[in-house]
Amino acid sequence: MNKAEFDNEIGHISALKSTMEKLNCFFEKLDNQVNEMLTAVQQTEVNMDQWNHMMKRAAMISKLTGNIENFSPADIEEKIEELNLSNKDNDIPLQENQMNTQKLRDTSAIRKVKSSIKHNGRARLKTRMQRK
Image (cartoon, helix red, strand yellow):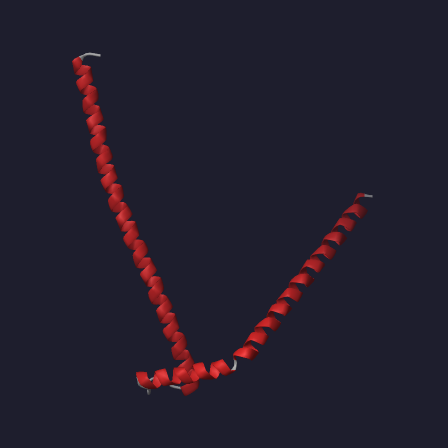
């Protein structure tokens, strides 16, 4: 390889190196933009969770009071405390209700499995009968 060819190869290599540096810079910027977008999405999710929580609280208050517009924030907090205290009295029946619901779901799942087994058995029997 002569000096001209060697210099030509060095030129190609330096051009490739420059292109790689530009690509790395581009991908770093792109990565930063993606991270900013993810942060914005996460913040939006937090804001939505806070909004949903506030709306649930407003719904509880409106159930108790009828109209939320006539109350100050202190009144609202007081009503929420009343609701929280009244809900604590109902915790035990709620837990029992959840347990009963779970038992019903378990029973229903068992019935579905039994039904599926019966259906599959009938289908196999029907197939055997058709073969004969």
